[in-house]
Length: 160
Image (cartoon, rainbow, N blue to C red; front, side, top):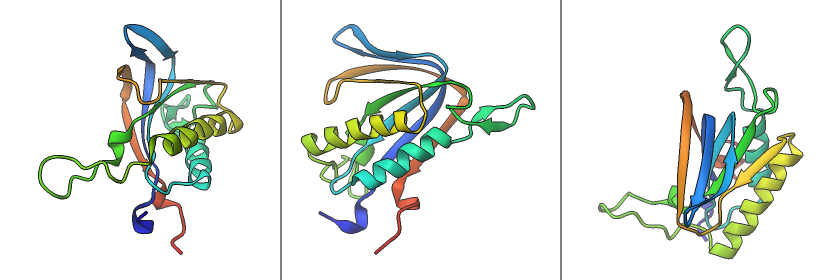
């Protein structure tokens, strides 16, 4: 474990709709809302998942009546498609082939992914769909804007 590198990552996209397919079958689908790709790294914690879920649920990237990004996914009664994506943990500092050694072990990553989904509900998101953990997934995203935000819990977590 490398304490200086523990941080959960997410790529958040405002979407008109999004879906995920596994083996030719749609396993998750949403309308207006957010597509969230979640990367869980070795040593990530429930505290980080709490912070990340709260930030995402309150992220004001939907337009209000004055065309200002002033509303959250909960304000617009939007939905979230949350997909676990270990490749967000890639280390590309050396060479041209990414290293994934900082990714959490599958059991740990899946536990935090499921915990994160529960926290989205606790933060007021009415519908959360998901992919299939560790499956080969095909993701369709109709990015609205486009609006794409990258979150890293390292930004909000206090250093010890």
